[in-house]
Amino acid sequence: MSDISVADASEIVLIAELLKRKTDNGAVLFRENSITLEDNTVQLLGLVANVQMTLTPPEPIPGSQTPPIKTPSSEEE
Image 1: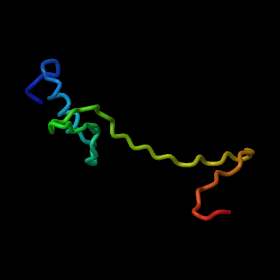
Image 2: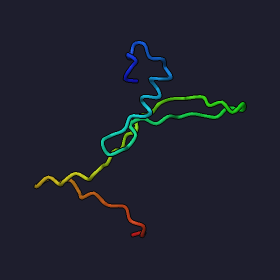
Image 3: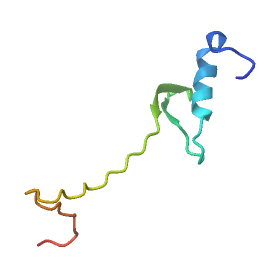
Image 4: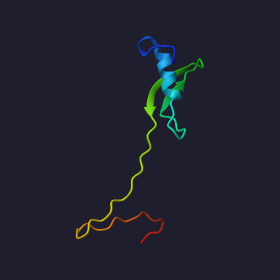
């Protein structure tokens, strides 16, 4: 797309450019949601940001009355 300005690019070119974008480690930035219709054409339903979120338990605050967070286990207690 380097030879086309964003203002002059078609929707298809802009979508294709978004779907080609990757992070420094090679993960795609956007994913597409689409369906294949009965006549075998593909209909784009939307673009979704490829986001990964990692949650870690908070560190206990010294002197707080908050009970410790239980970790899930496969055994019943």
